[in-house]
Structure formats: C-alpha cells, structure tokens
View 1 (tube, helix red, strand yellow):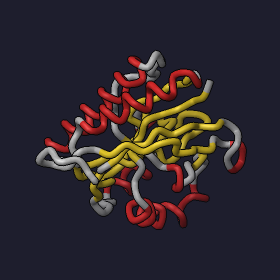
View 2 (cartoon, rainbow, N blue to C red):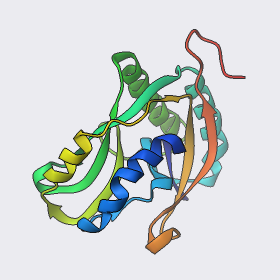
View 3 (tube, rainbow, N blue to C red):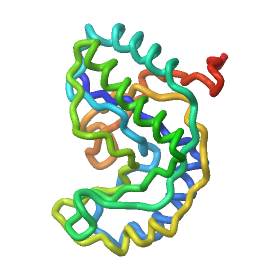
View 4 (cartoon, rainbow, N blue to C red):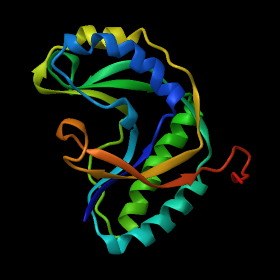
Length: 196
C-alpha cells in the first residue's frame, strides 16, 4: 500500500517568487513550513493505493486527463484553514477565471473518479484548491500572514498536465514526507487537440 495523490505541480518560475517572499520571514512564525520543491495543488488523495491497482489507475488517469483542457492559474492571495483567527494551515490561494475554475473542478472530480474506479478509496472532503505553505501544531491567529499573501500576485502558468505522486512518510527533510512523481498525464489543448 502506498499513499498517493493526483496533483497539479507548479513550475519553478511560479514557486521561486513566492519562496522569495516567504524565505526572509520564515523564522518569524512557528509554522512547519512546506518545502517549496514539494508545493502542489492536490486534486485527489488516497491513503492506501494497492500495488495491484496501479496499472488500472494509470490507464484511468490517462483517459481522465485527456478529456480535460489545459488552463491558466496563478497564485494570488492567501488564506488559512479553518480560519485565520484559529489557523492550523496557511495556504496560497489560486486565481483562475471561470473557464479555468470549471476545468480545475472537473479535473479534481475525474481524478477522484479514476481512483474510485481503480478500486482505491479517495480520501478528503470538498475540493478547495490551494497550495499549502505551512502548518501549525496548535491553532493560532495568522491574520498578518494572510494579509501579506493577499498583496502577492504571482506569475501565470499554463496547467497542461497532472501528476500522480507517491508520498513517502518520514523520508523527507526533518522527518517530513518525501514526494515522488510516479507518472504525468497530459491535458488536451484548447480546441480539442492533444499534446504531441
């Protein structure tokens, strides 16, 4: 059994400016900061993926991605779960126009369906697109951090693929998870043509 998730992984040119904003401020808070090299937008998560399901899951994710169109996103603003006054998670908000948001929602739905049809239980709740930047051990007021992020507007990027990622608990720096991209799946291009 392997912990896995389907995700949109932002490219380095999206990660770097946000990391430049946060890096000099990291020591000012008690967050367990997420490693920027592992920032991602989770579309679907499964705590236990049996080895026997991987080939079927791969085929289903290939088909699901091909039915969705590439779209544009940007990190713009921030937020906290469950609320800035008593936060456990600080995140970067994702900005998308209506068409991109529709594609993103459909991509998350079809990713969860691919897991389910491959015999894997998809965990989690309602899809809320975000990039987790840091976590807190106990609830704290992070309003000032949300305000800082609300002034941030990162570069746009075209989401033209999704990744299936294995999450290896305790194998990353400081005992955190290590993420490994197992496979990538191309989205179709607007107008119906698939990437070559």
